[in-house]
Image (cartoon, rainbow, N blue to C red):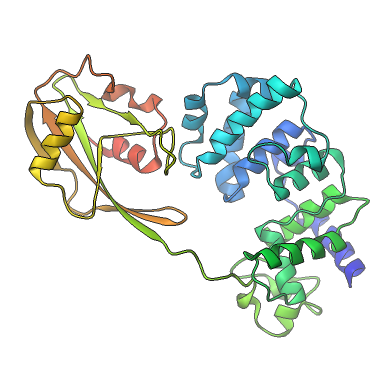
Length: 349
């Protein structure tokens, strides 16, 4: 069964593989860049970011010499911003400590910040032909359905079981092609929904297809409870169209990105609380305030759901000397969360 699966998979890949830029190179920098971008991200969404990053920073030296704010700005809209921060820090480490040379083995690669078992296996096999099996979401799905594995993929036992099976299936003579093939197969054929089972080369031996339980695989443990938060943003505007923009430095969502002054609480803040917020910022002369939209925006993150409102505060104070003051026309140069960017794009004076 293992040998027939390998051969069928490789034949399927030859006829069905997509032409993607990171498949045209063995440059570890570009492979690493693509893998970090594609974590938790579909290829269709990640491809423009890969093209933008590889153009702006064609080598690891270029990325290492960039400012973090520039990197975060280019990453804007992709989410999971810790990936971008780790990407930048790792680029600096490779340049400063490794003289710009990537480790050439799985054991060396996995020591890099932001590089886990999957990413290390991908780079090691794609760039250096090391026989390391990759296990990502696509691989979990293919193996679970094909072999009828009911162990939850997000359990420690499941991680070990699937990795062991992937290792057994790996074509050690062609690890790069095999790994690319099984991930592509999961993405294009053995899809999460509407899998193309009728045209699958392995459907006669596939457990899930034969039992008509394709939708039941892979099995996952109960999801983490979603945390709900209510954010009240305040857009301070002076007569010269300057506003206040604050850098989020704490280890929370959007670390090192910018946003507006904020009150986080379930209930709508009172007028006194708004005035107090302004006073903490050293701003006075509130002339008028108005809610931008009656209905709060709902913004969903991986384990959080945000209810967000924007209130405009027009002040008579001149914000020119304020340390957080930014002219509205300059906001485009700051890395902000996508919901803040959407507001900036839509807000009209």
